[in-house]
Image (cartoon, rainbow, N blue to C red; front, top):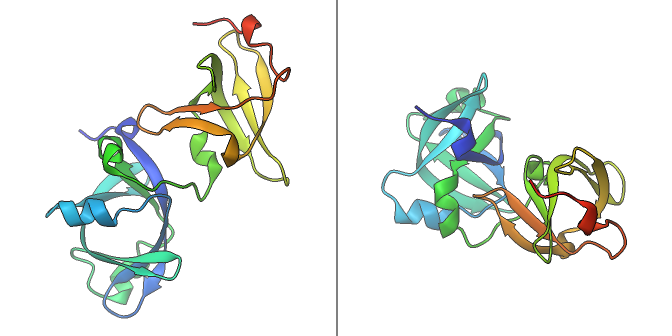
Length: 182
């Protein structure tokens, strides 16, 4: 049985492209190499909160997106039924991925946050990108909430498979000695 916690959302399908069933996709990782390595490469599409496997028949770049052709999706009408769906990938495939970026930092919600020196800060509850400065709302092991400014340049370590993020936290922002380890 497929468990959602074994997968990570890597982006979203856009709209159909052309008449042969191709669909645009905006993904956070480059999957071309994964696709080239495997004869049977599957992406999961979310339908009613369930993950359904779709075999990738072909993919090709187009500007800043990719075009995906799924097996069995052979016309525009079939492709239109899949538009705007989240795309998921098995976490165990992430170790083979070289280029990862985030279209939405909200994908960090639920990750465990560490300082660059390795001290556990807590679990990321929310990522607020609504202002010019991105903010992480983090619950410490003691249950306290911390508000931490965030920028991708601060990342010292990111392990998507283990859902761990380590960042350089400005000195004095947190007294990490008072955060209790669990």
